[in-house]
Image (cartoon, rainbow, N blue to C red; front, side, top):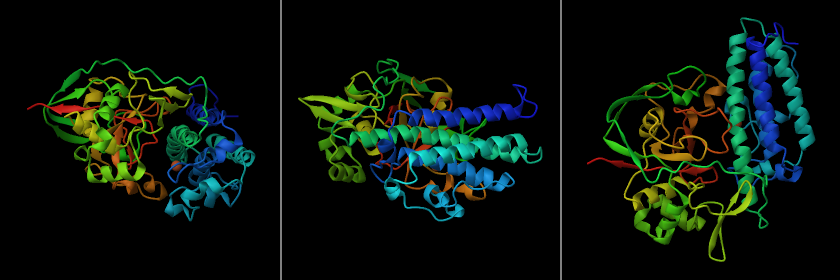
Length: 403
Ligand SMILES: [Fe+2]
């Protein structure tokens, strides 16, 4: 029983939020067999059951052990297996070897989840009023953290299925969301000083602030996302075979990886197919391109005689409602390095490792994708990946500077 169990009681609201997020993870894992859930297709991707366990460990480690009196860890060995990268939380299993963990099996992980769910609900009920704000702070981070892993459950299994010659479908009835047809239109962005970064109500990750001023040059931003039709033109024009279009590291990646098309594409009888969450389907020329790396997005922009936006340009345009499909289709590469904003400091403690220590050698993506859980992203949200990564639903839009 939740005390004061009125529907607008904060404890009831948090309990319901917790249940909803935890249930969404299980809903996403449900179409996958135990064999599907164990596989790791590359060091960057994790098995489904690892995601289910790691998100659970996060609540156990950062919420229950410090804050729920008398809480007993489900299994003392799990901290080693399911800690991802929190050095302050202790030693951990090597990331590239997550696919070797056939045990604990899916049933044990389900029991781990149930154990922690019970503990969290107990804490939501029992936390004293003085402790409540700190409980909510960690609980909220844990929920947003689990939503990030919900996206990875889909992108990681899609990458695994893409290695399988029979091209399995995650769900045969999966439909990609439809993009608006922006017909190549560009919108003028007001130049001058603007503010970016999170400054509103509600939740944000630490890396989204502090809000600060930026100076924008006069520019135009594409209302729409770059489409597969445009990408096929780039390919037909020798885009993947023209070194002058590529950054040196990008050209190295093209050679090393043998890239000649976006990720998960394959050519059959002269036609391009793409492995989607619904299985292998013809490439839809009208759909936004997905599964391209930063290197490819950058080369495409150069080929098109345009640029990728900076993250500040993207955010100003999104806040002004000048762009279509900002959210929910593909993350959009920006040409901004993932760096701390002015006056950013990573929080103290183990959770300070969440974002701050990754602010080197990665590029920012903005928006959200078709795999992002509803309500997770916002205009100030900063996603980040290494420039060679392309297993996410990553695409692009272009900008052009006014002379
Ligand atoms: Fe994580």
